[in-house]
Image (tube, rainbow, N blue to C red):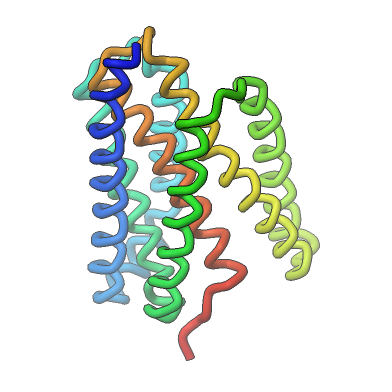
Length: 216
């Protein structure tokens, strides 16, 4: 198992880098044409969310039966669609602020990924707690958005979400080890990258919501 993981981790982080690069480059490129970005989002926001949800469900529950190429296509498609929504961030926030938050996210990510890789603690039970907390925060966020519209409550939700996705990084590093006997090497690398990609992106967005500086 250890020998397999030695091969999996470099591939996993390579795929993670590829996914993040696609998202940020496509998001930035689209933001250079604001009218196109707004038109895509106005007509395609719901389809994009549906595509992302379907891919997330497929990757979570069908990864064992999915072949390697299908997993790669799903991951890359998810990265591209997320890039479309990220164009709004490049239009809304100051570039220096975006780069600073990205750096902070990277530092937090590296620290928790290292912890998840090295710790001997059993983090399997943490998954259920994190999932329940995540679902509750998502529902609370929707209720606040449509009903209460409280900025202070939104900040609280963002803080809780930051904690959740920070812990998810360590947990998902452990998941790779737990699935090392169930998935083939390449598919495990893509699946691990997908989970860590979600952690990174969500952590980045939540940090941006609290600390990001909007354009004048």
